[in-house]
Length: 294
Image 1 (cartoon, rainbow, N blue to C red):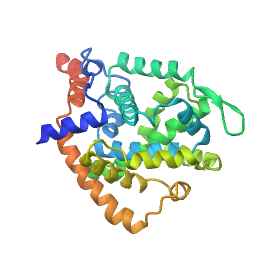
Image 2 (image 1 turned 180 degrees about the vertical axis):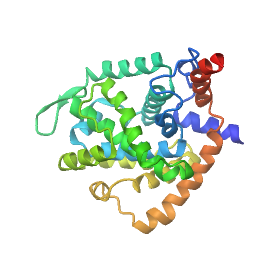
Image 3 (image 1 turned 45 degrees about the horizontal axis):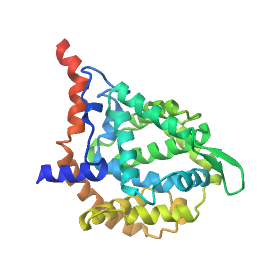
Image 4 (image 1 turned 120 degrees about the vertical axis):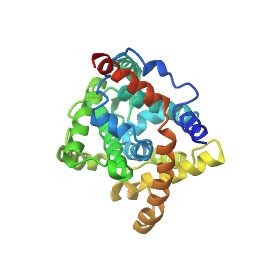
């Protein structure tokens, strides 16, 4: 049962091919962060990452320029599963993958971004490799990953200093992608979000993203799991974001129904993902040098 659940989770999130060659070699390579980093600790928690990831997609959709670029250049409508797989692979590769694999994944995204250009609703030009736009996408994503971890990790919650360390460490990925001005602490994050709040608003594409996420799934069981996780993701969003997206779920429903359901599902996922071949390969690679030296 445990292995079957793990296969289903991996197939849903990563696709049929896990590309373990990105994680299992060369021996002793720590990757961009290393096995003892706070980044590995946060990104290895499946429930926190999935709930945080869904919240991030909703929050990111409130940036009109970012959403315009996605609407005009992404296949999220025609191939939502493929879009999810590519996003999950990028996050796992840049976090747990070898240094070469992480750098190759980042280089590929930068190559694609060079061709993503257009005009916003006001007729102003935009480009996906704009440093400020990249800062928004990165910051919205990692802030939701961190919040997802803090809500669903139980006793594995980070201390305040560890939260700051996480934000400081993941700045590296944003900077390698070309972002500028990335907040590297909780204080800087709060200041950044307050500063960009006036630029954020929903539009037809934002509402479409929310509807697509909440209805995602190829099977009845997958749709049920995604609905539980996306309901919990709604609870991670600030109140103004829920209002912008037209989501009306009371505090009682979010805290007393959505979150307990997601915690139960998350516990099952953590139990199943204890056998994750990606995690096993990454730890074996990163720890190989230490074993040899010992």
